[in-house]
Image (tube, rainbow, N blue to C red; front, side):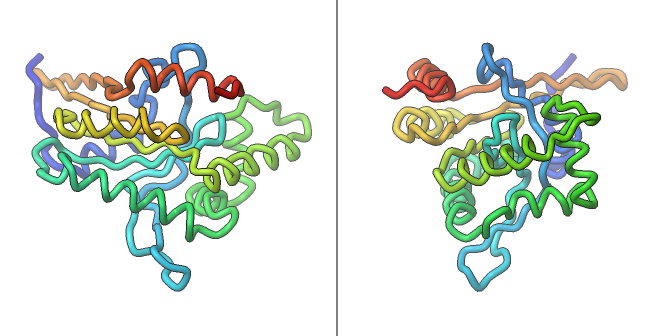
Length: 224
């Protein structure tokens, strides 16, 4: 099947929104792979306390560990993917940490799912909780972890494209080795098409072995 470029960026964004499992958790951490719940597409991020939103991140995810994951989607044909997108992503993460009010991610999630009750049901299923029991304390603990991770800067920026250029990969690897609280990754989702059949092939790139081992140690709660 021949490799096909995406016709536009919105098409790739829609694929990520509909199939977040294409960000393959087993390639990030084989021992404890992250899973994703989509919080909101085009989540607004302010750059001051007075503004409600200067920018919008393409996708905001959470994993089962309560780690906020910022997803920015670009086609490889977009020249901004080589350097400009990195500054853009750092703006998003820094300003979300600084200007999002407490429980903002929970508020965005409730908006996305239509109500707090619908969100709680979805989150119970996502976390593997039994709906027949009172899991309110578990959910409160999860949201407390989400808030703590955000305020501590323990976030995961993801650059998603049909192809990650060498310049961006080098920056991702550098950030991973020198920003221990932040897990920065590139995600290639290549599209192959032939005779009406479409295949999407994801690959996680940019995580050096040092960064991977350091992330596993942090997840286990071991101080270095």
